[in-house]
Image (cartoon, rainbow, N blue to C red; front, side, top):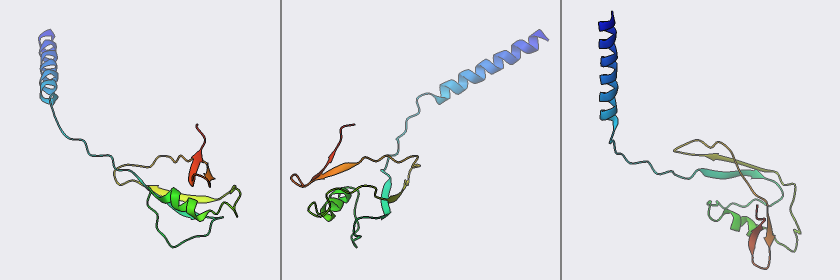
Length: 112
């Protein structure tokens, strides 16, 4: 009985050693992480246009739609958006609220 147990332990240790040696040194390349697509699907308070915005120009285009002489401040806006990711999952959304600065013609954000 003791001989069989010793043989079983030896086989298990050899199997673990072989698997450890065979699994070491694997090299591969990671897939690039592609950014998710974010799309504003609907909103109220700003006139809709027929333009399509890319992620890089979306905030500038929205800023161009806001005339600071007419809209002193926009608040309590309903914004609906959706996002999808071709190489992963969108787990959550994060947003920040900015103020349109007509002098610099850019969005100003709080440092949080």
